[in-house]
Length: 211
Image (cartoon, rainbow, N blue to C red):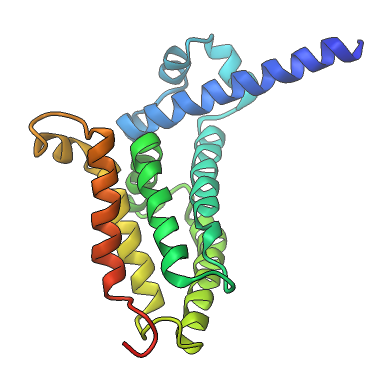
């Protein structure tokens, strides 16, 4: 097999995998793990069921991959939270990115929320390992900012919880948000207003050191 053929096959594999994951994210969000099926995911992706099984042997394997992808996207969103960053800029950038993900990837947030509400029957190990380590790392960064006098003393853990709750609300409760917006999705202007408002509400209490 020449390099050209291998390259095409590789691109096709990436494209098909992406289609499957996108469809699975939507189906798991709408029907939950129990209500979702490989057949429904295949139909949503517009590919044969056998293709889904070829790339992901079981529904659980596909589900865990979806949850892993969601966590990776959220973890990347927090790249701004580093010791060398300005606290307000870093946290503000994190909030902006989380809200943008709520806008563009609402199904991912719903999959995560549904799993947690059910006491994480499929990915409890993920919470205990990946999420715990990531959260502890970000808490340490925020505590360092506090110790350095760069922001006033707050609970780093509860600050993160507040950011998660506020930003993911716009994905997990999108129907409620849309209903209260006269049945319409937020416009670009409204999303910008939302980002500004959420940052103002959450970060005003953070303030600067000594405030």
